Structure formats: structure tokens, C-alpha cells
Image (cartoon, rainbow, N blue to C red; front, side):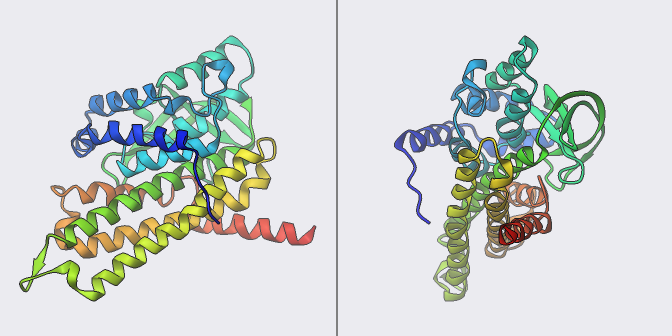
Length: 332
């Protein structure tokens, strides 16, 4: 499969990339990990000003009314820079919940605030039971059995990613009927987009390090075995990318039928997560012990990649969704 993005989408993604490149993200992430989220929320505010937060918000509520394709392009860049916070939940899932709340003024207020930069966190018991970074979220919901409920953060614990907390939310009042499948599709695809960006960033770090680090008087990048390892990562990421865009198109082309997008979304989630994990493991091998120290920036990307491996469904869960979808198709 080959996908060519419209210049408007690539330019939009490039504008976010340029903004984040000037934001000293390693310092922002470390501050977030230490409990100081001010710099991180300020970065998110600037990202929201580009229109990224409003992509999937309905135009009537002040959003862009865009598709999952544009959202994936934005989230891949956010992943490449390891932006902290519940960005997938805010960009991909919250607008779907806001749309389900109905057409009253309160629902429009929610959608408008999300579009304007308010953060949201969402948990889905049985699939994604923890709400990430609920302490910075203006909105917190629990999705269960095709219904969405308001929630309180409940017990909060640290993730393997120091710049990420996870809460076990306490369910409150029922807010609306939703399609759990639709929300899982959006959450899983957004996570895959983040992982694609993380994997690409770690590959770039590894290649750059291999061009600088010497062992036995020789650049390590000159060793054939290491070249092969890095090439395998590059191939895995490039093979996963078309599946990511196929998942985005499946959601965009089937807005009223989330079941039709299940196979492509979950296939993308599996392929991208595997590729990103390979990139992380290879990056650690290339860098050696320094790669997992708190002082080295690579560790920030490594731990985020590990944390996202189970966000919005495990690998086995998504493989099961692909299998069930194929079986259902064969039975028709």
C-alpha cells in the first residue's frame, strides 16, 4: 500500500514539529516527571493553538471537523517528541465523547474547551483500565459497556514512564451512550501514531550515536552487524506505516460503522507497537548502559514506548480483534 498525504497535512505536521523542536522537550519531560507540569501544559497550549486539539471536534462546536488521517499525522509528531500528558485521549477520544453528549450547550462547551486546549483523560475497563495523567485533565471519563460516565481520579500510581501517572478512576454519573468499539478504535489508532513517532525518533538517535561513538578505534556504525540491526528497525517502521494510514482511512471512511474499522486499526496497532519496541531494544543495544540512565535523553523515549505498549489494549487483545474480524468476514 502506498499513501501520499496532501501538502496541507504535511505542512501542518511540519509546523507542529518545528514548534516542538524549539521547546526543549527533554527538559519539559523531566520537569513533568518531577511533578512540575507547568512547562508541559504550556507546550500543550501552544500545540492546541496550531489546531491539533480541535482536529476531530465538530465544526459546529468550534473544531476543525477533520478526519483520523489529520489526527494521526499530528500524533505521530507528538510521539516523535515524546510530548507528555494524555494527548491521545484529548485528541482522539474526547471529541468522540463530546459529540455523544448531544447538542445542548453543555456538550458544546465541552467540545469547545477541548478544541481550545483543555486536556482530557479516559479509562475503558477491560481494555485500557487506567486513566493517564488524570491530575492535569479538565475532563475525566470512564467508558464501559457502550456508556460513558463522569469520574474522579481515584488511586493514582506511577507508570514505568516517570513522566506519566495512571489513575484507577471512580465512576460517577452516566453522561451518554457511546460506542465502546469506536472509542477503542480511536484510542488504539492514536497510540499507534504516537508509537510510530517514538520509534522513528529512537532510530534517528541510534543512527546519530553510531556515527559518533568509537570502540577499538573504529566508529561503531562501521560494523556490519550494527548496520543490519538498524536496517531491520528502519524496515519494520516503514512496513508498519502503511498499516497506520490504512487504519486512519478505515475510521475516516466508516464514521457510522466502527466495526468496519476494527481489523485495520488493530492490525496497525500491533505492527506499529512491535516496530517501536524493536526500535527501543535496538537503541538500547546501540547506546549501551548509558541509554537507560536518567541523565541520557534516550531513556525518556524508551520508557514512554514501554508504557504505551499496553495503552488502549495489549498486543494479544488487538491480535484477537484482527482474528475475530477475519473470522466474521469469512462467515459472511
